[in-house]
Amino acid sequence: MKDLLYKAAAGINRVRGSRGSINLLMYHEVLPAARAIEAWTVVREEEFAKQVKFLKEHFTVIALDDALSLHASGNPLREDFMVVTFDDGYAGNYEVVFPIVQAYQFPVTVYVATRGCQGNGNYWFNDVIESLQAPKEYRVDLSAFTGKQYRVSRHAKGECKWDHIQGLLQDLKKLPRADLEPAVESLLAQADAPPERVLRHLTPAQVKEMSRSPLVTIGAHTHCHSLLPSLSRDQIGATVSQCRELLENWTSAAVEHFAYPNGDYDNEAIEVIQGLGFRSCVTTKAKPWTNEPVFEIPRTGVGRYDSVSKLAYQLYSH
Image (tube, rainbow, N blue to C red; front, top):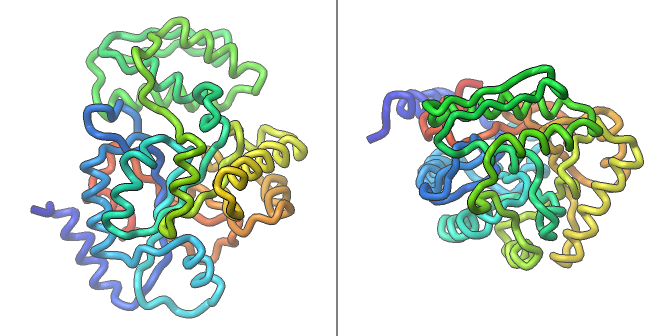
């Protein structure tokens, strides 16, 4: 039975009538409940299936290219459209999401950061997340880097535990590039190495297979998942170009769309990516797509702790 928030959100949709919209959602990873660690970026498979059903009932789910055409036309919208996207290029996008995409016949865009696909180690933020998952007390001293000490309580569970981890991640993201690696090494030495890797990445073969489906658009997300404002113009061009070149080699198809890692960008990043010939870029600004240019398209993030009701409320309260 749908709860009150879900019903209220559906009611708002009916009241809106002909006020159409274009919306984009941002997911990261989807895993079965038994493997879904405490991380906002990891949605449980059963919850994702419920969300897909909700989206199919209340929106016209379209491909990114179709959304670009609708937006460029300038014509009034008579219905609510939805574009579903995934960032980073996690293995669950193939193992879990791709079968659901085929079963429900709805299009998705997968933005892939290519270094992980080459088997060259995990990204630092995944290492941090996985190292803090055990049901124990964590005390991490990073005062030499962030000026802080951090505690993750043994009693913290669910979203509360994620709040502790996220606060640490946010501080690490603010560090200069030269300080980030030693800070992460210090943290990992003080925490627990995970018994097995949960956050794995797509292989080139999986990217290729997904790209052959008319339901999947492959987009670029840099090679090393670097935060673009921290890079020089030449470095931005290099990491974006390397990512696109690898993806085009794997898929034998043009890669024309880009997602800013962590949603971070500035005018220089826009200029470089536009100069490389991309057709669109997506951000993490949570709102429907109205007047924003195609290199600053907003998206609403969806995570592990967002139920169908919460998602509905987010979408219809804008």
